[in-house]
Image (tube, rainbow, N blue to C red):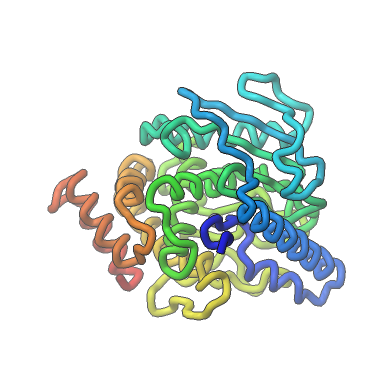
Length: 348
Ligand SMILES: [Zn+2]
């Protein structure tokens, strides 16, 4: 029950870990099983802590950006946050993971503040807490509901999970969603939750790099992919799969149209799978409108996120985004037309 009320968000979808656990390569298999075991142990600890009401209190609100980075020293969730190693305004550390967690959470804060005038995840200035070096060679990153926690990766399939700004932006956006639409983490509401995390994760990166929709890579996690895989990223908003017949990762299962929607029960009803459908719609909107995606498409999606409720599905998101496009740009605007055409193109 506490798992439902306090979902633990991780960046690696179960379908990737399960596929790796079945690899013919014994080394890959061992590492995948190790990651699954460590993630399961973390999840169990987390549920117990939640049930006991023993989770860390959210640090008191601040008027402006306030980051805290801790070293988990390869410990478990019980040990979080760990030892404080860098606080707001401190000099850079010698540890690249510490600096990446600090910088990338800072860029995410700046993005929400400058683009949407949002003061941190809760809009009340909550501190951004990150712990690095969670677990041992752990292939995952988590948003626990209070803080970020990053594994180091095994150095082969994945490198340190602090390295991708879109991964950090994705996980922190789960915090924004909790304080806004608070979408349930299963089936279509869960896929919308994943979708919004991907949208704003990608937009943080595009904003930081000052890229137009045409220049952006539209990938999630390209910088965490290790030297032993050919897969370009974990996911893509574009039409083609992020990886295909990859010896380790297999083929990207994300659908881009409602007719291919996953209807099974794995991955909490396909939350990391079916997010491919609205992701592709957002990409089509951004490309059709052109220019910087956070300015118009991002604004329509942000306003929609504020208006959604916990059980909303894809049709609700489509309807809401059309309303927001109308009120922002006009009922006969090209922006609204772009939104309508995009949802139609993915079968909604
Ligand atoms: Zn997620």
